[in-house]
Image (tube, rainbow, N blue to C red; front, side):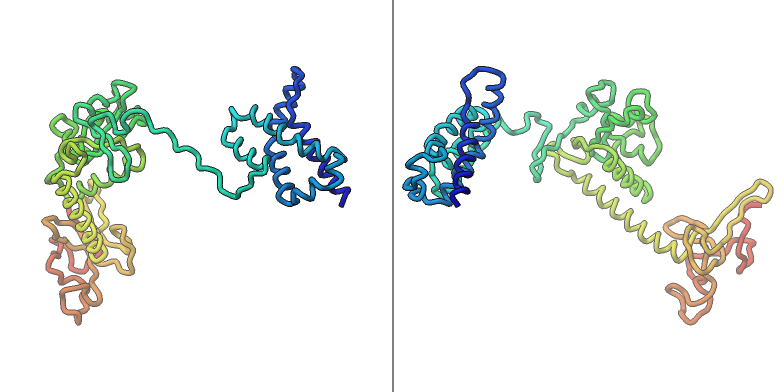
Length: 367
């Protein structure tokens, strides 16, 4: 037991000596001082642990302490001043640590938690966006709003600005595709403007490079949706364009709401078309100068795998006509008498190809 205390007292004394900053101004002394400063927290923790575990009376009334055996009394008496000396050297670097360690060393073990750190300083100036073309969205993130004139400045002619382009009012930074969208690039006519209609119309004249997308076909609206998903995935959103789709506060306009209806109708039409293709898959087709055109059916025609081939028929739907492979055996899919064994041949939207046998698996369309 005494051997253990002797070792503990010696260890504490050695640590206190290390912590004491030497006065000799040499490189070696400076290094010892730094090492002492780094060991100051360890010394304080060891002393605090010892004082918490051992009643003070046992230490101060013991012969070891009174007779200063093994340097125990000196170590305890001088520990505080040596550690505080180290802390004064450390204070400029680790100010919050000073108070915590001093409480350990001086025996102020009240058990109360340390005071909370001061709050961070408030940012200087007004925290609101300085540009009149920025708004604060509901999520607390800034969304930049561009006027047409501002977006035109991001056509790539200035290396520090873009190129940017807008699609359906949403602005994208396409700088990493500068070779395509910058001056001289194959898609440079899209930069610095919203030319949404041209993405699906293919009209790249000034008259066609516009953002009015009213009156497009179902496939065109689906195409615009696919382009929008492409830019969202591959390029960084940069903001919104004030005008047709967004107002001066960045809110969606009535035109934007109409666009969403057109998009929804196009998706619904695609869903119906996909269902119809399962019932009436498109035909295979081929053409040669010698024999003309031919349509025929197989079990994978139109990209629809099935367990029947069917026969070719003209199929009329949505004001358009196409070739469809029609199941000619079993009960009908819908509408007709379920007791028949003619498949879907009696559907009113079907017509036989002129000059083609009713049950032929291929029909000539051009002489």
